[in-house]
Image 1 (spheres, rainbow, N blue to C red):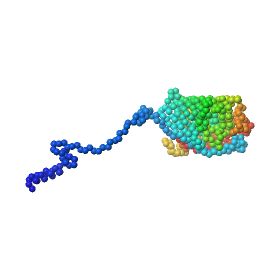
Image 2: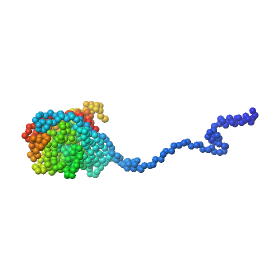
Image 3: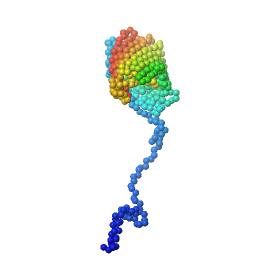
Amino acid sequence: MTRWAAWGVLVVAGAISAPASAGDLPGGTTAPVGEPAPPSAPAPTTVAPTVPDLPASVTNPLSERLGLGLKPTFELRGRIEADAVVVSQSTSSKALIGDLQNGYGFRRARIGAQGIVGDSTRWVAEVDFANGNFRPRDLYVALTALPGLRELQVGYFREPFSLDGATSSRFITFMERSPLNELDPARDWGIAGRWWSENERATFALGAFRVGTSNGGFSSGDGGNWAVTTRLTGLPIYTDDEGTFRLVHIGGAFSHRVPLNGVVRYAPDAQSNILDVNDSPASPFLPTINIPASSQQLYNLQAAGVYGPFSMQSEWFGTAIQQVGGGPIFLHGFYVDASYFLTGEHRGYNRTDAAFSNVSVLRPLVRSPGKPATGFGAVELAARFALGDFTSSNLPQPTSGPFASASQGARLLQATFGANWYLNEYTRIMLNYTMATPEARGTPALPVHVFGFRTAIFW
């Protein structure tokens, strides 16, 4: 090999082994000396589709953009009460007031929801389907940001009247309220303002209501059947220190009413047994009363006391009826009850509602969040005595129903004894025994014995 040939081989070998320089072209070629290398091909990219901007009012409502939080909250609520009621009465009692049949089924089966809207509104919507028919129980909106008022309720709800009526059926001591509850107006369509003091030791309520709303929550007609109802309560004593709970509740209520269709009516609704699923059932041991009237006034005085596990409660009810075509009529009655927790609990109390509330079980049988280990639950013993005087020389003669053969009405003496077992704050089992002794003019006093059992749960 010549010297020039050997030199050429070395040049080629060096070009192959040397790293590519900045002037190298893609694919192993080299740009001419003194010229810049062409740019590399760009990597492929994906172009996102263009999405038009939505108005701020669609993507962010005004309440959210202003930080108001006005979207309503939603929370389920409800209760289930399964009852068995057995009646024992004599042949003479059946002839006087009718043959009361035993009853087994749901006393209440309610489902609903509640919530708030910011700090200005709360709402409740609940229906009862205990006997297969849907009936409204609470359907209202409450405004909580109006000047001069704590709350303004509008819709279908209980009129502010008695302590027994203001206390939810979830928290009443007995399976049924007293027979004097017949003189409580219960639920109607209306509007009511509520107020309570800063220390929550006094409450006042005033409302206007449509009288005669049916048990199905319906009211119609052009009549002036309206009512004005008011309630005033106070807590002269209230102590909720650790290990000590004491209170004294006093109050009164008044209602002026124009009756539906010009008739004041007190009568048990037609039913096949003693288990009545009505919102505020009439006592089957009192006479059927239909009084043509231009107006009616309802009165109530109420008092209650709690000293640790012991509590007492009493109310007097009265009604004055301006009868059309007859003299005035006055009916009245009272009850007094007492209860004691063997396990050390006490009745709860809601100061803004001026009514009793849930029992805080110290040792629940079913473990509850924030409570100690499972225990036996709470046990409460209770007794109630009630007297209803539905007699008047001006009463119209009843043509049907209980005491159809008696005139001038009837009196009722009723004693109830109960035992309640609270498994936890939301579940309880109730046992009741009632001896009702109705008495009408010219008829003997005939006792009726009623035994009741209930399993109740609420949320």
